[in-house]
Image 1 (cartoon, rainbow over the protein chains, first blue to last red):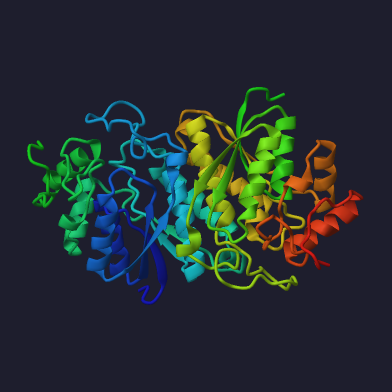
Image 2 (cartoon, rainbow over the protein chains, first blue to last red):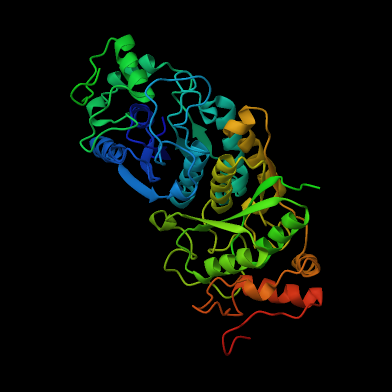
Length: 227
Length: 227
């Protein structure tokens, strides 16, 4: 299908983006992975991105962005990560995160002359983040097509969000079919230095429930005493 | 008019953004300035942003973003800055720059609970950058209103580009009326460590012609021998 067609794939080191990369490769795209080092507390995420990219044989670019000067999130500030999901939008929200990630991917896509960007957002088990919905992705695609040299020269850019309508269980089933080794990935908001997951934060709870619902053994390494 | 209404103003240290800040303040907005340290070669730009913010009595936030891992521009790579404007889009183009700047401003606006973002883009003397056009600004405003917690809670966000239809001469006349001290600003793509301008790059040429057309004395410090 898309053999040799260049794509930039946003890779966080988590389960969703690892599956997205596998799907992009399965569709034949020539992928370059992009991770953003935005001063996240869970540094082991970036090591997960490195492992996933290496396992897939894909080049990984890392852009450093220090969002701590902006603040506003438990993921980059010194606020405790909540263990139990509450109402509304969680404090683990990083301001404008997917807009920032997509804009950096757009910059890399321009340099590589790639016409496709993949992002592993998901509107089903999405923890209430507003920038994980289809109308956001469509709006960003419109920006991309007004922002870039390539688009202004008649080469439109497409944003792919292949997980957007899938449940976590469906994502895990699809990735398992494609041979994704989820033991390489880190989803926990407060994983320890070895990438071991806490088992208690929102992200861990959604992930564990996903493996259960998918009927796939959970390969995640949890810290001792995690429930 | 907008007394006490919070706004984020993108400030590069150049003539356009200094004028934009003055216009936002004149409209009564409670402004926070945002500069992005994206590894630009013309470091004195950031010092210009600091001087302009200090003179206006406005807080300046600086976000560090290392775009050199992405490359693709004479402004961040080791490519010579061209002296004479050519056809099409110049090599001084930074990939997806205004998309990236606006997305970072959006993050800061969310944290500050600011409903307004100002950017000094200009579609008249714009050197052919595609992300300086009204349709780009409109598309980004649509993204902002689908991306954020505030928008999802019913507080729309507005992107202001008050210079978009002005010539450089009109911008200079407006800023001069508002008391902008253009001697504090740096427009040159290759200013020296003291902020002295080369007088030859595209940006210098547009700026010089702007002061001439505005009938305003040019306060720019040029390097010895600049024409």
